[in-house]
Figure (cartoon, rainbow, N blue to C red):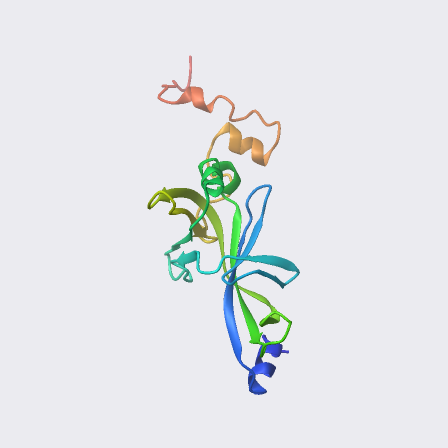
Length: 195
């Protein structure tokens, strides 16, 4: 069975098909699901909140070779409550997962139902790790929040717990005290062998 069977079937039947991006941000304590449309959308077992044209994504590309590109998400037209959250966000954002999906829709011809009906499940096109969130004001009522995210391949050459510190050693082996005194050895001369 191929991908997007419902989408292909709708297109072959001559129905109009559209697509939109869906964004998942795994904020600590409050994960969010957004889509670039209006109103709420139920797809893939989640309810995605519409942002309309307020969200912009720059640098959404696949990592090629040894380059791990940085992606920037910008949410404009936000209120002061969102800016306040951005000011206190480092613990809620840093190293948290985020994903971008594509969702296909059938454009329904009027009626009481939602004009865009999801076809198939959302398909993940990009995965990353959130890095930094910042905010700016372009005027008294024009605020925007910017979030940078790195590809999941950014740290691919760095081994897990790659620093010789007490903290990293305890992450690998809880209770181990083998590297506890490393910090005291910086710039210290040790004579070997000692007589």
